[in-house]
Each structure stands twice: as structure tokens, then as C-alpha cells.
Amino acid sequence: MKVLIVVTHLLGTGHLSRALTLARAFVAAGHRARVVSGGMPAPQLVSDGIELEQLPPLRSDGTDFSRLLDAESAVAGPDLLTARRDALAVTVLAFQPDILITELFPFGRRILTDEFLALLESAAALTKPPLVLSSVRDILAPPSKPARAERAAEILANLYDGVLVHSDAATMPLEASWPVSETVRPLLRYTGYVAPAPAKPHPEGTGTGEIVVSAGGGAVGETLFRAAARAAVEQPDQTWRILVGGADHGALVVELRALVEGTASIVEPARSDFRQLLPRAAASVSMCGYNTAIDLLMAGTPAVLVPFDAGNEVEQGLRAHSLARLPGFSVLASADLSPDTLLRAVELVRQAPRRPVDLGQFDGAARSVAIAVDMAEGRQ
Image (cartoon, one colour):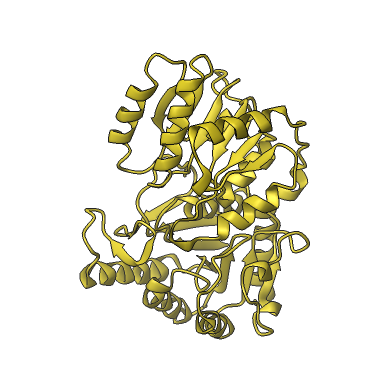
């Protein structure tokens, strides 16, 4: 079957990373998968073996998701938005997907509603319309107004065949963060957590005994990186590896390298082999996005979580406090972040018992493929 996955990440890169993982699972099962990305390019993410199409890119203005910027940081104009819609229509007509998956929409990306609705209209106009699914993570940003949940429910009821919920219904049901109506509930298909295959330790030993600091691949985490660098100065013989994301990381990398000069610590751009650093790391310091949380659970790494909470974001906080019930996790609120509190939190998780790893709960990508293909075949 031909599978088209459409995703636009506006701040971090987690949505794109998950979409690529799903695409790899479809390819591994013998299907053809194409990912259309509408966010900024993320070369640190591995896309080998996947058809990856880049739309004219957009990003949010920091945490202001109501203001979209183009690749040159100018406010996105109508010509760019029209070009994106036209490109999607061309792709749908040329690719003729059997399955169409929209990442997050209609639960989010409301500012791109016209774009997604045009995509769905193009798909519905095909001689053989595809199965249409939404793909969402375990925790969503709760709607600020009831009307937003009602509008999402209306779109789902009229235009979608199902919702792939990449979570465990027993431990993190969608209604923990989103009001699930009786019209939406029958559409939900829980897949388990979507994750790549477990990463083997880095072949060169990189990461061994280190404190690995990360904030994903987007342009966030500056406060965390600065606190980690100052903490590293207090432990000159301990290697803190600070991985700075974002397209404009250069100046911050230079600044932080100067700060940790003379210590064992390393500051560098975000790495594509990040997951291979975790299995033998002494500890991880990170935010708590979906993909990072799963990476930490799969590796068993002791971890200090500093959930992203700018712009009234609550998703990462909910996830972090859920994980904090497990050994080897500690949550440090961004308001409490300082070099001293970070050092204490790292020491706390390093002393905790090693967390057991149950890889059985991370087969969500393969289960997503099975669910989607079964539904598509059932329509024939």
C-alpha cells in the first residue's frame, strides 16, 4: 500500500521524528511511505529509506503558535501558504495514497486548518479516496476553549476514519489531556508507544559515564543549557555533553564552549546518534517531549526532567510527573532551575536503583501499521 504522512512541526522536531518512525515501520512491512514535512528542515533526524518531501517551511514565533514565520524569519504571507496548499494537492494527485495520516491535526495545528482541509478535500476527490487517520501522541495540549474540541470532533466525524493514539489506554488515556466526546471515542485506536528499535551503545563509547544534556532538535532549551554549563564548571572532571539544537545554535555553542573551557565537558550541536549516547551515560538532563521520554525509558538512563512550560504549555509537565513515579526519574521545574538545583537533582537520580526496561510496550509503530492496513483492507 501507499502511505502518505503529512506533518508540520513548528517548534521542536518531535512530531517529525515520530512521523519518520511510523514511515519506517510501513516500509519495513513492505509498503511505500512518503512523509511530507511542512516545518523547518531537521537534518539531524534520520530519514534513510523514506520518501521525504519538504514543503516551503514554516515555524512558530517561539511559543506564539498564532504567528507563523518562514525560513527567513519573516511573517508567512498568503503566497507561501498558497504554495504549500498547491504542493500538497499535487502530491496527493501524483502519489494516490491508500492511507493518509495527518500528524496532530485536527487536535492541533489550528492555524493551518485551511491547509489540512484542502489536503483532505484533495484526497476525497481521488477516484479511490484513501483511508484517513489522525496520529497523536500520548498527551495533547488541552483546548483552551470548548469550541476548539467541538470543532476537532466535527472534523473527525466528517472527514476521518480513525485516530491512532500512540499511548497505552490503561496508563495514559487520551482523555487525561483532551475532552473525548462520544462521537470521537469510537474512532480511537490505541497503538502503544511509537519508538525506533532500541539503540545499541555508541560504537566508539561516546556517552559512557557522561551527563548528556539535550532539549530536542528545536530552538528551545537555552535556559537549560546555560544552567547545565554552569553546573559543569562546578564539576570540572565530570564530562557534561551539552547538545544544542535549533538552526541558529552556532552562537550559543560558541558561548557555552567558552564557559566550560578548561573542564572535561563538551558543547556541540544536536547529534543524529543521540540515542546511542544514552545506554551508558551516567545521567540525562532533558526536557520531556514524547520521543525523549521514550528514549529514556528504553535506555534505562537515570534522568532529570525539566519539562518545557513556556507559553502555558502543560503537556511535558503531565508526562514528566507521570514518569517521576518510576525509579531514576526526577522532575525539576524550570522556575526552580539553577546550577545548584540541577547538580543536586543529577546526584539524586544517579543514586537511585537502575530502572528496569520493558521493551514490549514500545511496539506502537508496528501496531500502527497493522491497524491502518487492516482498516484500509476492510474498506476494499
